[in-house]
Length: 194
Image (tube, rainbow, N blue to C red; front, side, top):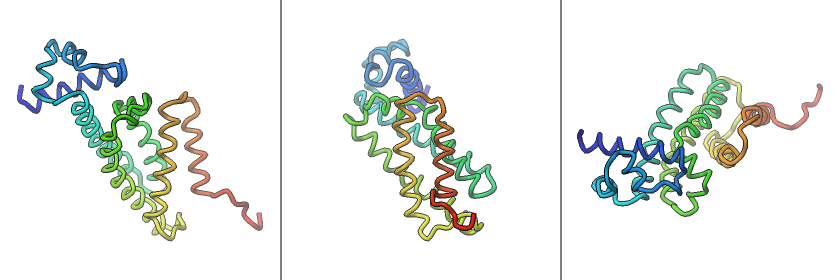
């Protein structure tokens, strides 16, 4: 096995253990044991648990970007792409696991590198959302003066939903997202003449 393949295998084992035991409770000894190796073996590839966790968050972030692009790329119109983006975002977010688990355990409060890694993906998300909103303006389905500013505001709202997604029962979550979409698409102001 090459160095990169071994490193990927360590990350895969760590991801599985983090999903089952949690980030906080999983040790390098646990990860090494799952590979039938010693902790010293892990140190040839990662300086410590934080280094391993950072690499895993980075790997999952890259997977997240690719999957999100595929989800919205399959949709024709801006409204469909907008909804697909939001639903795919949470589905991918929870499936990838490590960031989700760290959020659930509030591990990110102790490890700023998770949020620093996240800043890179915030730029991607803001740009992607702004592109969808701009498409909607061109299609005549959205009325937005500054798509980038609105995209930033929507991203902030979605981050608020991440905490709920990660810490509460998932029942009815899609209904909450649809309610948010209804507000975004239709507004809350009563229309005159109706």
